[in-house]
Image 1 (cartoon, rainbow, N blue to C red):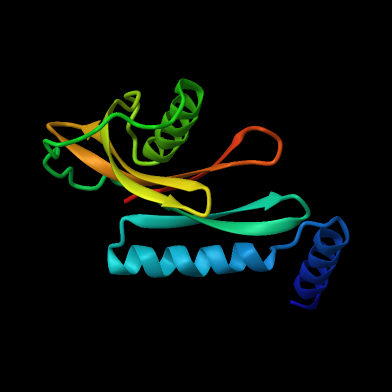
Image 2: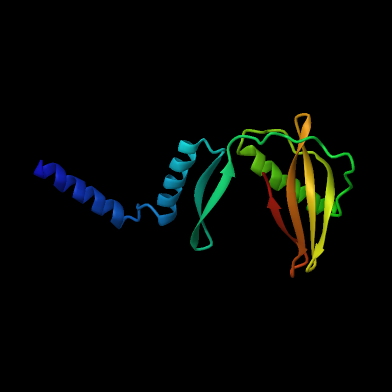
Amino acid sequence: MRLQLSLVAILASSLFASGCVFSTADVAVRRLNHQAEASGSPYRYRDQYIYGGWVVEKYRIIPPVPSPTPTDLKPTSASSQVQKDVLTNIASLQKDWGCDVAPLLLGVEPLGVTNNSTMESWFVKQGSGAIQYKVTMTPSADGGTDLIIEGP
């Protein structure tokens, strides 16, 4: 018994010394996922090391129920490149719930312009309906466009 405890202590020490320890984010993710599974939530969590720190990302594992497509949709004000970037990001979000179909923009509802940011509700085809994403586009200092995409 004493030998087993010594071996466990040596193994734990070597793992710790080699940097193989759980981050606080990893522990939080495990707890959040346990709670999400227990409650039947369609969301899960994962952690990533980005730019010198850990971040926790919430993502959806099953698709939301599509809503009927509004009949008065408008074209987006986004350039073709920004539209492509937004749809690429939406495809990444949808991939988490097993959707391999490229997203198709049906149209938008303009939400207005605030502090040089243009906000639109994008309606993306999903089955016989649509899924709504709130997209905020802000010109960036380097000449590009900063995007915030909020999904279901």
